Length: 462
Image (cartoon, rainbow, N blue to C red; front, side):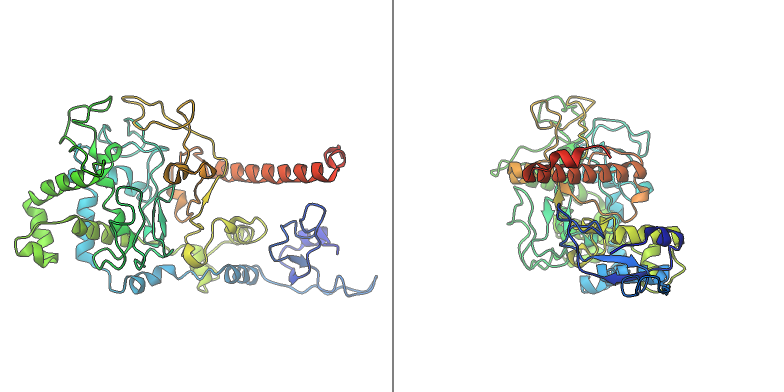
């Protein structure tokens, strides 16, 4: 089953993709496709290379680069039409007026008791509504957004908001999620850590029908992000802004902080007028509540749906949307390189290039020094310099260092990559992952060799 690699290298677009039986080697990998045997074995061959007798002429059947990529995308379940599904899945047209109100809130520091940060302070429009930093800076910042932003660091890099409407799990440890696997389906409610848990955002709540509406309840309660520590004591209590309320009977400050934020918002005539135009209860003299704030902010985030990249246009039939090098890269991504296995597009991945599962990818740990002016999150581990990832939510040590697969849309707008911004060039992050995968594969080979008594043969020099 010779691949005639030399001929194929000379004629990269004259190939025939043929499904064949796997021929596993001693490590369980196919000798032809070098892939794990649980995946389809598809290799490029010269047509007739097997069937023709020795010395017989071989016929080269051309298969275009476009045809190969179109077939790969179809097999992966990529349509390039996810953006078109937004209003259908919302069950209504987008509300431009409500989105404009949500935009005002997104850029307003009024949602933070400390008074020096807004959603846009960390989710900057200059970086795809994501972070301008490798690790976020929330409260006690220098009132700048961009590379010159300074202040104590939080725990992780701020994820981008663009296309978040399609994410079934939010945040690096997936702690805000839709149990149904669909962010537009609240038939099972939405699951959050305590104190919201599964009791705050109940199944089939007509006012909280989408995951982003629920998630918008959380940032104002985060002390490191916008609420601050004023009145709470400790190294980060700088006495500025509005004091944070004491915890309620749940032992948490979340609901008391939300109530304090609502007092501020309801005291602004402009916001009362704007909400009165959208909500009859406010027009009749009632107060703005947090569900209304969540709906407005989420509506603005729905407007940040941008899924019309060249590969989307290619999948819809525009074969000139991508350059040949881009097409070859996509063939690797969806094929031999195996990227799509984690950076998935089908099903609940919603063509966001993430399986939205938690993986321990071996990303280097970066932990700011805990203390006033440096870092306002105490990290885990014996040295106080480890981020345990999903374990922080599940308390299961098997989940240590697991983080959500990063969605890849618009990632060129990011200044850094992975949960802690460990890499600042996309080229480096890709190389690091390939090194980690390669090391893991080699480790698996070594273990297999030890078990089968073939270690000396495996490790001998060529």
